[in-house]
Image 1 (tube, rainbow, N blue to C red):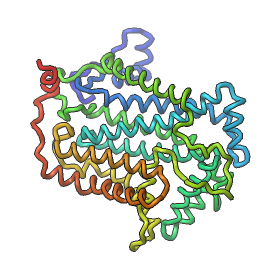
Image 2: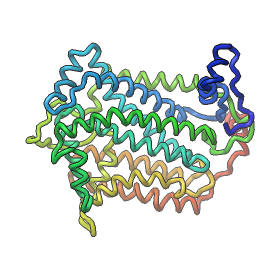
Image 3: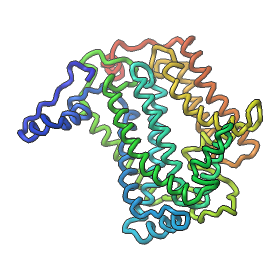
Image 4: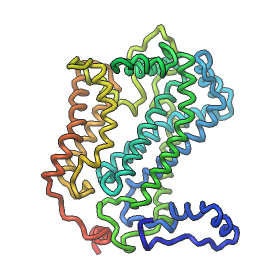
Length: 419
């Protein structure tokens, strides 16, 4: 614990003393989420989304384990096992299936808000670089898990999504086609690919859970960031995590579960694609192949590359798509401003909101047909996306004059309340 005034766990009950002396799990929980963990006193509701991501992960793990018990991982039986066996023959199977499918969407909603909160408030800056880097690793693992899970229902969009996405690996010179065949276990998605994707889709969430533990561990060393970006200077700047933030997180969890319930019970297919209720047919290509909505911004970047310049356009698209995520690893060193919070950085704040609009535009283009207008917008959006991180943020960090920072978190809180 980085705070010298943090309370330390001393069990009173003899049973807890015996357990704690042999396996310090009670002490670990107390220091992680209890009164022993001091938290900046000015955290707002944007800091709820870390806990909400944990809730979404638990929901996905529980529903996924139960669904795996009834899934038939073969090209001949996958579609019927999901749409007939699970939906009609398994007790509450329809609920489990819709909770798992919509839980993925809720998970990505929470993750995207959590990441943009980190971008705005500078949570990637020293001394929290490792927290940010592990967060990006978790994001990559989630994307891989979600893609493989989307293939499992073996509908039209599942099959052709697997065909198109794995096909992009063939753009890699020399080894590309070999990698594609190795991923699929053949030359087209079939039993081998379905079995591999099912195995990895089941395994990767537990890898994500391990990465989340490392993420929380890395967070507890420097402590949580806060809206002002000013480091904690004393006990007066903090409050215990429990009961203050357990109550605040409880409100966020309640709202999350309400929205989640509305999706499950009233609009279970709203975020899905109707073509996935058609059995996979290798001889019938859908009119418009599109991934799940949470991949749309990256899909737009992929499709934005249309010209062969030194390298084939297909390879440029693959490099741009992966580069749009990998660039986040370098953000702590691209932004050299000593001020963390966007609230005290006027120029950075404008650039941040332009980035938000840009990503939303890329998402819209990624879900639209590959028509000239959407391709042009995707190219503009992709160009700005990379310019934001590689050009705009470094320049702003060098020339920007930030607003005066408060002397402490307490000073900022008292100024806001008028005390």
